[in-house]
Length: 407
Image 1 (cartoon, rainbow, N blue to C red):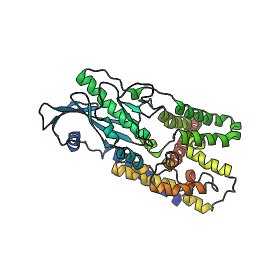
Image 2 (cartoon, helix red, strand yellow; image 1 turned 45 degrees about the vertical axis):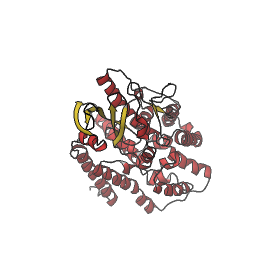
Image 3 (cartoon, rainbow, N blue to C red; image 1 turned 135 degrees about the vertical axis):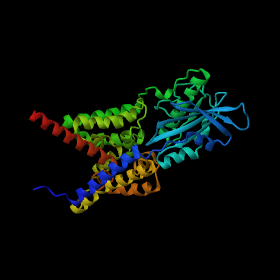
């Protein structure tokens, strides 16, 4: 007798199939060719004529209405930011200085990007030379940092939005380096492609090694409370390193940052690698700073756990896939990824978040005194995604072993 599907299974199947259909349509059939020339006219009304002079990265020569001898070079470049691909337009004049920088497309967490706009970050590029790299000041540990370099050709990173600041500056450099090379015969090296292994990468690597060891050396669990305290304080509060839903979306949609972004490599490729090797979601167990913070609160709080009603637990477990479904459907419909930023990580570790997160964070922390990883279990899209990948991996291995035995 065939097993009948439960209402829960039918509901989850509906979510999965509709996401697959709309995601496929959004990726392959809904993208219209963009008119980049019109974007130039929109941001600079003084430009009346453009001609494309390079395909990759896309570059135009733009002429002004006030002076027939005056022209600009306009490049369109992109870089992966905190949770999205940021597309940047850089306008340079014929003297070799940056005239204007505009972000024409982004899906960063609104509160982070608002910091960049309110600080007038783009204006900081005006007047900088394209004949040397444009460095990032106050971004120690990041590729492109001016740390150890004597130069005035730099912009100050925006506190609380450093990752987005670095991505924008990298994209600007991609454009200015090309213009300097193709039009001024100047060989300039983009510093944002240099590998930089600092304390934050070392701290991340250490906890990933601990996570991998935990699979084979069970005795390490004796020190779990202290290891999680390290994860919460060092990985979370000190270095602000964690996987976001936006990062997973970028990974699966193929929008990867440059390989020298070692933190991203460790967080995403390291997490996926551990799942493929061990079949376990070790990120949530050991590496996630918010999961660690919740568990530390429970362990050090010493309060008795409250057991929830089993029917209520089953209902609550439908919340993560439902929230993830709604967020992704908004992305597929609008082609903007801001809806993916509904986690509390920014609020607790960056002290920057949407108002709803500030309201929910104290509640989540309070419930963590009585419930084991309440947010992780009933809300988190990261755990949902990684657990699904681990489940698919283990089923695949099981089928492979079965076929191998038959052969």
